[in-house]
Length: 218
Length: 218
DNA sequence: TAAAAGAGTTAGCCTTATCTAACAAATTTA
DNA sequence: TAAATTTGTTAGATAAGGCTAACTCTTTTA
Image (cartoon, helix red, strand yellow):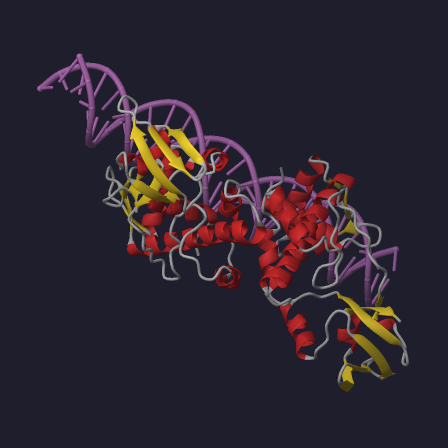
């Protein structure tokens, strides 16, 4: 059994891995808000437990075992977020911090019931995929809005940065998952997008915002 | 802010206090499954934080502050149990271990939503009272079934021992909160009760069981 | 390509919450 | 009431997870 701390390391390693699945000690320590030596010693511990593969001075990589355990924690996190939004009417900008705590609860039945009551959802309230019971994920291939062109019509599928501030920003502008967005123009000097959706005819979204919106082309 | 460990000490002190509100170090350590010196040193820490009143060689007593904090943790525990039973269809014999973990979650909104969705309940699935937001409890005065006499008709209001085994025992015999029980006779040699309720005409309950059933005389 | 900057490591210390061993006080019992 | 038992305390050790200081390795940059 892994400790709460170990679970948080696994989750961070899973979430911030690059394409090769590697994470630098520096990035890991920043993500967890701890100092590098602390991360370094925990990595060694995880390596002994065969949860990560590690050679000094090289990026850390989760093993298959580590990946699965991380995915199952993320499964609990995302099921919880969905449950809080759908069944308890808590705002999508408020559920993250609660799920961060609930994800560590040891109980098979609790999460099975959530899954069942939600009708076996495949995405969470932010559009992120919920790993299955074996820790497998199938991630729909989205494009960043920032990579789309003027004239295209797209549908918001997921958001990347799920901080409360960003979600409140979207909510305030009526931008929800599923919203169909028409790209009216792209300002070349700052890459901001002018879009229309719903009743809004000309809303400007900065490039920072567009990089965090994942869309499907229609 | 108290640590998870401190919260468990407060809860135990609240739950096992005698009529004078005192708890021996020995009983506390047994209740928490730790050794006496460990309990002893934590008591000193709690005393420094003004959560308990403590003089060496005397029973530990929660201060008003300690009592309130304990009651608020118990409030979260009992709201959770009720939510799991009522809204998630989890059995009353399975909710304790989950609530034991959920009670430590830091979130005002989560427990407010539970309270609201449940319609502001005053008792948990085992009949124990749910303290209010200020930590105040009003405990209906029940009698133990074992203190009742033959011929009386009573209604099951709460159960004392909430271990999963005991609850399964009751469920298997169709004994639920609210069940009206008629006491047919009491065997003097072992204080077992012969009772009838529902469709059951002559069920024998041992004195151990009767001491754990809290009833209201009708 | 050598120096500077950044990333990673090692050593040693701290705090929390636990333990055992040994001793002291209080209570029970003969 | 004196001895035995139980309860409570003190001292010192340990493991987990964190830190700082100092050093080393790698990468970037002038």
